[in-house]
Length: 252
Image (cartoon, rainbow, N blue to C red; front, side, top):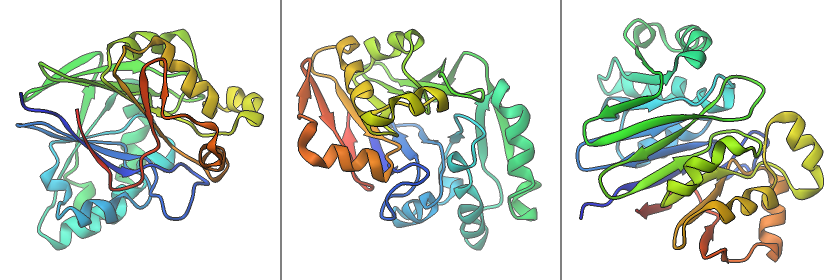
């Protein structure tokens, strides 16, 4: 069985610890390399792997907030220095309407002329990966992503508050990459801003299958402080809980 390889390039969120890049992950199969979101600092992580944007089949962007795509500028500059002049961006059409203009107006001119935008409405097959978008609950149109091959399923929730629309993805996944932006004492703010607290994210394990993994990301200084205080246990509801550092690789 060929496993999916998941690279956690950036696990922080806006206002997060300085040693963590903002949200950015690679899911790699035998035939495809998919990059999911591209926050500040992710370009350095990509360079550390010896990759440019031309080595990525698709860059999926979950929504238009700048902390989920601004790293594309630095990565484009590096890519151009290596002779890479184009890459592919994938997003739901509700997101791409605004996102395409933001990216074009931000990238170096030589790259912005050549970047290719692709739309996913519901499901899409890319080589040996099957992709499916799931709406998140956030102030702007935001879509999480289910990535699966024949054997394994990964669900990235993107920025979201907890709501019933996430349950289908949670039930199916072997790995859930779930945001945990705020500490528990800011639960009201989390609801207002369309984010999730640490305990709310952990509560989602009740929907997940036994033996699955939940990785908490989009971490801020405040949520990380709660996580390292010892209040999070390694397993809940027979689901393994991890708080990945940048650079961690999982085989799913």
